[in-house]
Image 1 (cartoon, helix red, strand yellow):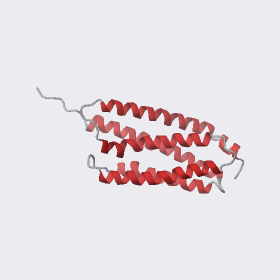
Image 2 (cartoon, one colour):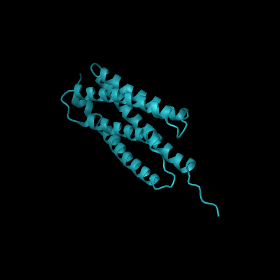
Image 3 (spheres, rainbow, N blue to C red):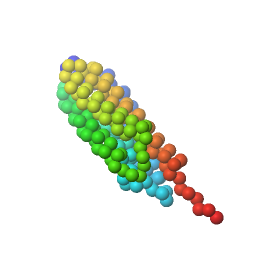
Image 4 (cartoon, helix red, strand yellow):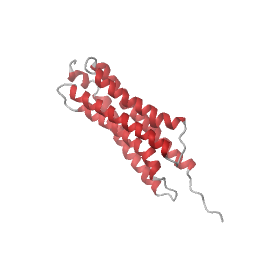
Length: 179
């Protein structure tokens, strides 16, 4: 592997931005869910495990990647093993989310839901797995793949958060009593 300190140091600002954004967005997601819980019509736990929890997991993945790539590793191997493990666990998790999406009865997912709750996440976690293997011979390129994954996790999470909020604002509105 090439000069590790130089390779990782070049990514410092990127991961500071990714980590800060992921942390802030996790906080905002908690605020949004807390505000939604104040409504008379509350989302069910079944829908939460399918649509809300994966959003936090993806924001958490971006935050974890930022932390991993900021740790003072002596070699890239431990970092690559950890982000590869994240990829394996993430692929399994994305498959579980897909299974829950099929089983839940609260909402019928459309193609966009399948794209942002399954296809994009499973692809992004797979990129992490493959980049861990590539890091052995192609560290610089692998770091670009990890950076792309972190950014994708943020974009997936932002889309899913927005989708959840707009669903509850426009579709799941409280009905006002008639006089």
